[in-house]
Image (tube, rainbow, N blue to C red; front, top):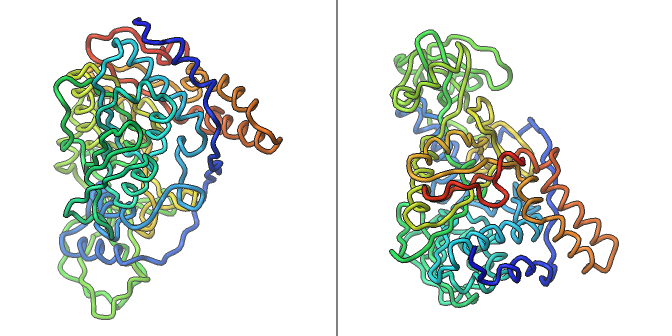
Length: 471
């Protein structure tokens, strides 16, 4: 390993000052929810009436990213007053020790002078701010920061967190605000650019690219399928007309579906009728339900071609698949391999295909994902094995390892002790310990959150903190 000040870098954490961070509250199970629907519910209802039931993936996209009314374009979602808090917001310790992983990868590569960073779903920009502020020598090598973010509100928050100046806007409107295009951070006058998707990002040929995807893949749309006698049926979203009575005029039958009750596991056969809205239709009565196709769909034929889907599952099993995640994972692998870079994918999930993790989140509580579209977050656990399968042709992967393991390997306990010495009150010390436990405890975020490393094909040794044998 080239020296490049390795010992200095490793010891830098001891010289850092403490700053306040909002403590993260636990998210209890909660199934009760309001039946009030915003205007987006009416838009989705009209679409279903016009074209028929939609996929879970399409419903998710409409609920989260519809201009103006979509969840990510409508409200500020982070923090104790929002719907959830991510690890970087819990404590500076997360951002510091995770940033150190990138610094060590940089040193392994000989401390290249031209570095570019891409972060997928950067939240409020806290992680990137931690990296730039805490490791100034590494930060000086960063020529450009690429932030993939569709929310205008979050772009504004990121620009503030990164102390941006000379902000440029483009002509596109994301939600209610003009979309930020590029800016310059006060940290070393580093160029900052924003994008709607990873396809739009371009790098210099000479750059080494480091990537971070923290709680990004869990927000990507999924398709839900169930294995039946005729193959993989698809779970779709339909309007629930059960309580609308005479206000609905029925049109000729279209297709037969199976209704999946959201209240229990009972399944019943139903001939789905198409409907049209009457003039006095009320938004307050709009509800949605899951239904199941009687036969395989184009999506099941396209996405479930691998052998494991025909060999590992039995009749009645259901699975969640995210084709969009596969595409982005492949692109991430290509970027890392072609630029001799490295990436971390950090998210909650398992290293196998899952069945029933699709859910809504509001005010730190879980609820039915089909209620109040545009007003709640929608998420599903990440299938790391699926990401690995799609990255492997382009780059090597190591992990996933549990978050608690990774953070301890990177020295979070030592950093905790350093911060405790800097505190002046018992309350501050208790808060620090509480944050540390929240991040690392197996019964909290320490086990369900996992780290996956992506490295070039030329790297065949596990990077620091990514050796699964130690996990």
